[in-house]
Image 1 (cartoon, rainbow, N blue to C red):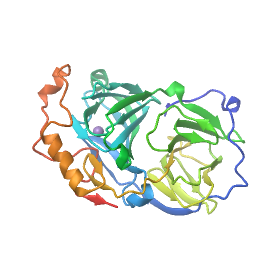
Image 2: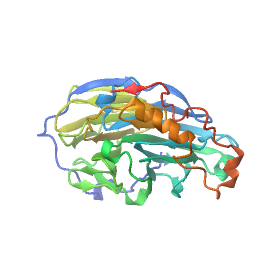
Image 3: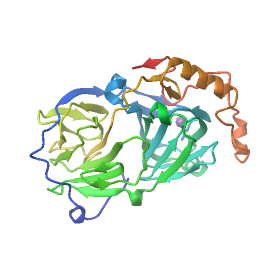
Image 4: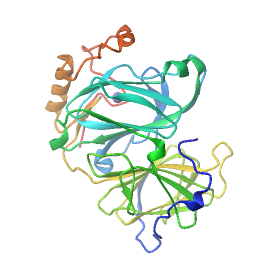
Length: 342
Ligand code: MN
């Protein structure tokens, strides 16, 4: 698991001691079901079974892989539309190419993030590059959907790369954890990702036996997904392991402790930690569209059919081999195609 690593963790800035802060209690721990995405890469649906109101301002989180591809095997998504939110793709191992109808795009690899604001509408494609398809290799990453408030759902589409080298690196007072801030703020330290809604995204690595006690904004929700290893959450020390999501209740600090013994294939406990200010608006979500009402979602599909969400740019001629099917409701990212509301 490369992402960003450091040779000497003890030289990093340390977050404030949070032992005096009120630890958030555990609201729920759920296990992500496994499935397959797009043309066939394995995913864990991290938010499955959790109410949208608990996740607000987030909508959807997929752990992609970790998987070791044979040559000729890696898969991506076809061209597809989005409207009303942001897609954030964090690659831990492997390489991913992104292209969109707005001219955005780039290649991201170990520890990089691509951040696309779909806003009023965009088409994009996310695939491993041809040479990786030829060679095969390890692939592991996350795709997160961050909702936009009604006032921002019609923003023009935008794209940003967040490079691994720009991620803010911190440790705890005991030096037992590596904290990578991808976006947002933690204890006065700020990550590089530019966000439309106030959120914090962190990838943390805990050595066996290490305790992570993070000061966490009171007005943010708090979600911790265990991507590898196992340990305990909250001062209640509820057990959690790979593929499990913890939703925390109110309070001032997130507490996670890595078990003293970890499996040899994942020697550390690896966490994806996220929270943000709830938007507190009605959510109407179907497939790749996240709006406030069902009517707006159906409008998004009609607009996609009319070509108003963009078309595949002519420079991507090779993609014309798989033309866009505008007659069918887009079924991508394991997103439910029946209406989800809150
Ligand atoms: Mn997409």
